[in-house]
Every structure is written in structure tokens, then in C-alpha cells.
Length: 324
Image 1: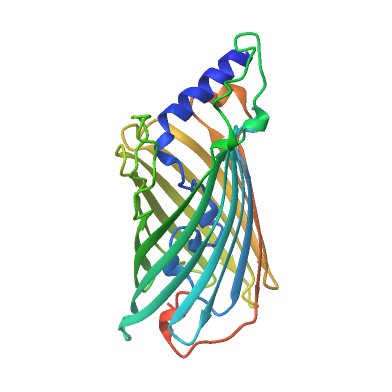
Image 2: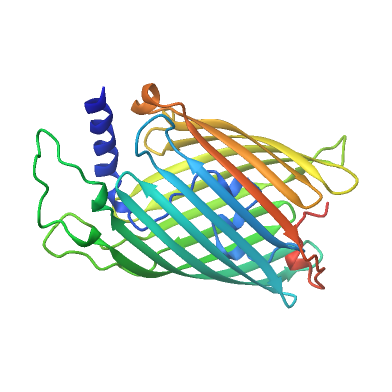
């Protein structure tokens, strides 16, 4: 059993090396936190927003991926926003830690039809290392390789850019992550220096015809990794209901697949969240549908957040809610 699990993890790692220095995006953005995906969302809304995410993947498998992150964004002046992201990601013996600092500017294209354009920029600092302190000799390798030293750590500086178009309840964002190439070991011959990935996030918020406090939101999230042209798509749906105090709860579901295997989902799962007196809580569960399904109980994610320091803007381009 142990050898099977190790084999599967090695296969996955060997097929995903191009994701190095790219923090994986799961369903954090669906927890009413679009800033996870793009800096263009910084400052949209009337509050300082803080969201803390904890994610444990493939529960039941030793050394499976584990992630913690914090996202905070706020508006300053009438048309600008800023944000910061802190994250810690563990995958087997690899560790990623880092932060992002983001800036966004929001423009009105047409006031009457509520068409807005947002442009965003992020600076990223990522620290990646292999934790050799976790290496242990075994029967097949009784002596550790003496050339593996210093945790094989590397720091990477990079930038993300994005654009967001909104028209009433419709939104479409495009993001280019990790614009710069990274430094690599020229003697390995297998590691890509291009770590760019492209992301599209689009959807539509619809108001119920029978209840003005009910919203439906179908959305699609697409990722393409430029190094080897791998790509995946999320198809999502959310139901959201407000009360008179603007508190709300929501229910949703997400379906993720590789784009060359549409009918073979990577994972699928339900989600739910609630906002009460500016305190936010959400939970997401994903059932793994690949070869690891028999060895784990799925992926769990919790989001806790708080909105505070409310300040209304004079510019409709930073409105947080769709006005029908």
C-alpha cells in the first residue's frame, strides 16, 4: 500500500513540475474573495476585507499538500485599491512561502449601463525549498546523497498583471501570472524557466424574478500553464440569499477537469458560506476523482473573514454589489 501511494505521488509530482513557484488555485475565490485570482479586484467594495484560508488536500495521505493563506484588500481614494497576500504551501518535502503586494485602478466606461474597467498589478516574492531535514534513509537508499545540502532553496521575484471588465451583472477577467522567467540550474536540462500561467474568470450574477434578495451566479475559471500547455477548467454555480440587514448565506458546487478530459473530473464538491454582521465563514469539500480516490477522503477548505472600516466611494466603479 505504501509503495502504491508513493508511486502515485511521484507520478503527480513529475507531471506538475512546471507549477513550481505557482501557488495552486483551488476554490478560495468562490468564498466571495475574487482577489485570490486577480489584483484587479482590490478595492472593489466598501470595506477593508480580510480572508484567511486553510486547505488540506487528499486527507489520509501522509505529506499530502497543505496550504494556509491570508488575503486583505481595501480601497483608497475613490478609484484605486491595494491588497496583500501571504501564503505558506507544503507539498511533501517541498515548501513555498511568500507574499504579493497588489494595486488596482478602476475606471468608468459608461455610467448609465454600469460598464467598468479595472487594471491591476502585483509584485510577488516566493521562497521555494526542498526540506532535506525530512529525508530519511531506507532499505533501498541506506545513505543519503551528500551532495544534497542547504535545503536547495531559491527566492523568486515576479509580477502579475490583469484586466477586469464588468457590465451590470456580467464580469470577465484576464490575468497573466509570473511574467518574468525564473533562474534555473542549466545542467539539469528538464526544468522549464518559463513559469507563466494564464487565467480567465468569467460569470454572471442574476437576480431572481420572484425574490429580489436572491441571486444566482454561474461562473467559469480557466487556467493555462505556458510551459507545457496544460490547462484546466472549473465550472461553478452559486445561490446567494440576502436579508434586510445585507447579511447573507450562499450554497454552491464546483466541477474541475483537465481540458483534454472534460468527462473525467479532477474533483467535484459542494460549498457553503455565510456573512453575519460583517463576519464571514465558508467551507468547501472536494471529492478527488483521479487515481488517488481510493486512498484519501477528499480535500477540505475553510475560509474565515471579516469586513470592517466601511467607507462609501463617490465612484460607482468600486461598488461591491450589483445594482439591478
